Amino acid sequence: MARRAPRIDALFLLKARLLARRWQEQGAASLGLDPAHVDALIALVESADEATAENLRAQSLARAANLSRRTAMKKARAAFGALVTSIDGYARFTGDRGVWARAFIAPPADPGPRPAPAAPRDGGFTLQSRGSIEVRFKGTGEGVLYEIQRQVVPLDGRPGPWATVASGTGKTWTDECPPSGVQEVRYRARAMRPGRRGPFGPASVSRWSNAVAATFGCGDVVPVVELAPGKAA
Image (cartoon, rainbow, N blue to C red):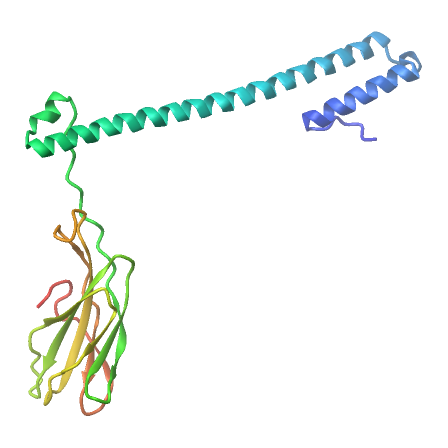
């Protein structure tokens, strides 16, 4: 049996009690011990046992008291928040900003703008057999709308203005009637997140994606540097 006392309190008390009883049975004097010292060890072990049990009871009571405190605090905060919400609603309904001053609370701050979504990534396009062009963009998250613009490059190579041709939640759009007799048609997209006050509030808008170009005559996809980053033409 190991000579050292275990570091874990419960194991130490178990070992000390067991050995002290055996020392008594063997006869403390035959082991070179004073019987009174062995009796004192047993009394100390019992005292430590009682203190440990009391500590466990105190911890249990403390956990229960803390749970009760948190529950009471939650209810108090909910009641306070409900009253403040009622004050806010009354002030807005009556149009009387003095309500907040009389209630000794500050008026609610206007919600800040939502963070702008990341710019969509181009996913290429497909030339359909009937002459239409399917344009694909990779999305940037949930609750986002997409605006798709088209730019026509005539045969003289001078790009025309960007024009919005579609908007919605879809990340795929088909240009059913692309212009004919041109050098190429470019497409780009950006993501928009509605404002905090609904669809008519200020929206947060991403940068425009890199444009993809449907080049007629060779069929290659040519990446085009964005002409006006972050701004519609």
